[in-house]
Image 1 (cartoon, rainbow, N blue to C red):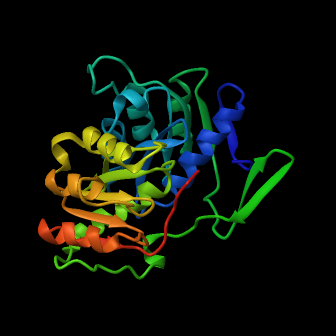
Image 2 (image 1 turned 135 degrees about the vertical axis):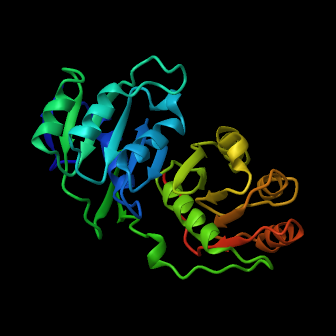
Length: 288
């Protein structure tokens, strides 16, 4: 974000930069052309599609209430057609209210796209940012000093995952699971995401226990939860009468998690009882 060009809008604030960084980090991890909507550093909408307009619409529909006043990021050029959609798209909640955003970020804009987007609001911050580089360092401030660690640059292609359950995931379930896992990487812990067909359907973030995050994510996904992938940023400490069993009973299609709990065997048993494949990544995200 420190190298982003601000083409239009009000001066960037401290929180603007934090939210913009969160959106840009997530959209740069997507497996294909897509859109991310962030609110309070959490992705509330994520979608990929060959038609970028559909990706944008799907991202907003995931949680239109949270998307209002959020940050929208694209990993492709914004042309006039997309800019006009950003200007005119109305909230799926009532079909009347035009969506309002604080920031739009993209790697580039066509001249026509930039001018069209400027017409949305005099205050809309329009950012152009270079593609996020990997192998960077993460710094966080604490009282009297800094914490430093390698950035979490892992993507599914970097990992040889395993599936210890009797049921093995289909090719589509693997795609759904990996998409959910990428989304989960960018959600504040305790993080749970639900995804299917290159769309994030729901997420639970920042809860003091994983059960609540699962309940929130399942609730946001609604009827679309059945057959979807559920991803967890860290292992499930319990399975029976807890998150894993609740998700299986609700009709989850596949579960993906790091593994590493003393009760992993219990989670596997529960999945076997419900014929649900569980993928173990061997790496956790745990964003704080």
